[in-house]
Structure formats: structure tokens, C-alpha cells
Image (tube, rainbow, N blue to C red; front, side, top):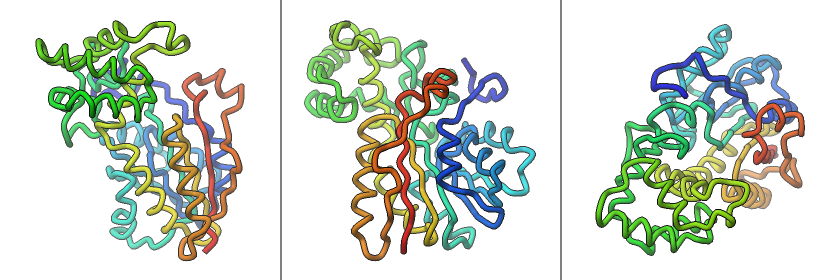
Length: 303
């Protein structure tokens, strides 16, 4: 576990770096985007493979010190920016960059975010029920759970968590908050475990899907992905490629749908390079079990 501000004790494994580099084919004269830089594993791989310049973005200001540490020896070829990837047009315009030679986005939560104390993403520790990727903005999960109507809560747990016991969970949350507010991860996880049959989720903790749903809701994750994909494809030069790594079916479905739509658009046409999403190798999953659900899709800008 990391306390907020610590940056030296966590080993972070970037996912599917070999596949990312193979698709982007970095060149010494190229400028590349790491749109979710995190601990900079993908950015480092691109630089080591020959990328001339990497611009790394992350919405979460607390991960940027990790990226700076990872890329310290490459500082003359890297710029790190605290920005949401949906703001890619503003970031590039401010730097006078019209197009880029490739981009990567890893839509998953990083080990840093999951392991840093006090962020509320994990139900394995007793922490404030926060879940904000950028803790300087917006209401926390606890704030939102205090007022959301039962039906709306059930719908979002079902939609964002793909949880079939969503109505039962929502009813339990609304009942519980009439007596005491839900303020910690332990409170919420215990409540969900009480109402969801253990046998219903044999391979995962019963609280997993509810926590996923709330995190997506708090951070507006799915809406951001749709906006980002169209923005970044617009900034690719002809022949440049985008690789996107997702970790659950909701995100993967958006990536697949947007890529298919862009195939048909005249002013921003792309070619899909992955008929089916690529998956991590058995060796990678053995080394990094968190990679097991990763799916990579890639597309190339044509015109």
C-alpha cells in the first residue's frame, strides 16, 4: 500500500507494451501521445523503441511524479501534462501541434491508483469512499450515494457494473443511508456482500461490479472515452495509428463502435487493424495477473 505522495515502493507493469510498440512503429522524427501516461510504462517503451518525442497526459495529478521518475533520463524528449484526454485538442493547440504520428490510451486503473492509500478505489482496505480520479474536482462517491434515487442507482449499477443484483443492492443502500451515511469502502463492500449471494460471483468478490459501476459514474468515464476517440483520431496524420487498451466490456464496446463508425466517415476515415481485440499472452498474465482482462484494439488514419 502506498500513502499519498509516496512514489518509490510500487512496481507497476504496463500492459501489452510489445503489441503497442508493434502497432505504432515509433520513428526518431515522430511525435507520439501517451494519453493516459500513469507511471509511463508505455511512454518509456515508445522512447526505447525509437520515438523522437512523447507527450504524456494524465487526468490524475497524483500519478505524474511516478511518470517523471520513470522518464527522468528521457526528459529532453518528453513533456508531461496534467490534463484529461478528452482535452487533447486544447493540449495540442497550445503547443502548436497539428497532427501526431501515433497514440496510445490505456483505459484501465493503474496499480498506483489502486494501491495508494485513501483513494477509495479498492474494497480491500477501509478508506473514505472517494473514487475520484482527480481529487480536486467533483463530488465523491459518498456524496453521490447520499442523494441518488433508488431507481437511478439500480440502473447505473446494472448499466456500468453489469450487475444483475443491482436492484437488491440499490434497495439496501437506500435503506442503510436512512440510518447512517455510507462513508467508507468497508461499509459499502460489507453491505453489498450481505445482499449478493456469494455463489453468484464465484471468481470475483461480490462487491467488484458495484465498485466498478460507482467509479465509472463518479468520473464520467464512458462519456469521456467517446469524446476522446473522435478527438484523437482527428489529430492523427495520415498513416498514423491509435492503440486503445480497455479492461471491461463497456469500454471495449465503445472503442469497437467508434472505430466502426469512423471507417465510414469521409473526413476522418480510419482502417481497423484488429478484427478482434488482441489479448495479453499467457506469459504476461502469469507475470501480471491484472492484465488478464485487457483487450487491445488498433486503428490507422487513412485521410
